[in-house]
Image (cartoon, rainbow, N blue to C red; front, side, top):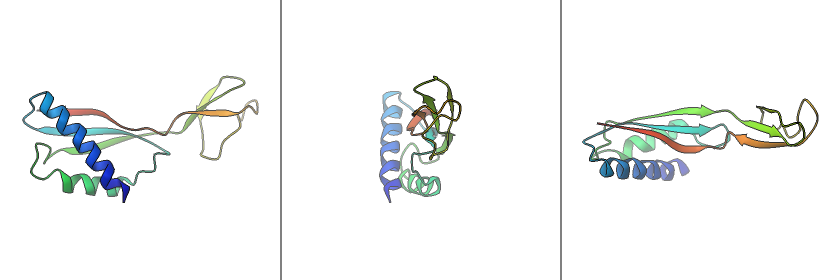
Length: 112
């Protein structure tokens, strides 16, 4: 389960940020999760909740925003939402380059 390793990394980031800012408590850790990030959110939440015990993040909420898959056409320059199987621009037939949807990062951490 790679979600446990992801949860460990997320918690490390949050705890380090909390220490650097002399936080008494971490209230929320918010993520940006791309459509193609390959993260099972239920497993990630479970892993995170098991790791935070006994830390300043013990009561922290793990939240996220899903980032849709988007791309830009190399020919006409249009940017649009895509499906994973879309490789050609539906407007001009040019090749699409991914511009969003692979994100997996901490967006913000709420401290108290």
